[in-house]
Image 1: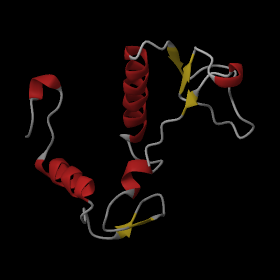
Image 2: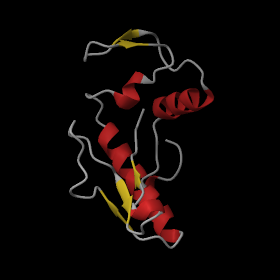
Image 3: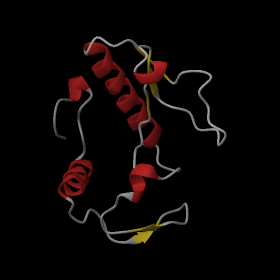
Image 4: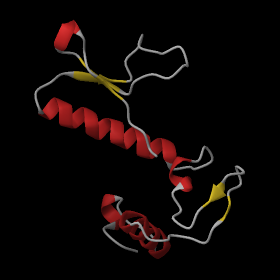
Length: 114
């Protein structure tokens, strides 16, 4: 295991190796077909966005929280997943500032995990 178990930051050797390979842009796995039907390249990036990936939602939520904290640290009030901002395709923004910017509009941001 790597990192600190008590802090919840431990990783198996395989997860650590894969994470480093992805970060460096190196091959992370053998090309194969995902259970969802998509082709997975040697870079292994598909697993970060696959609908069947267990970690996709938690990564998204952590990024949302980190973005909200960064905006609030800058002294700008904001909220996560504001109500009433849904688009016609059902998508909605992840973070909205509560201080109007140009033309009396608030900024909205979306977090994408690949």
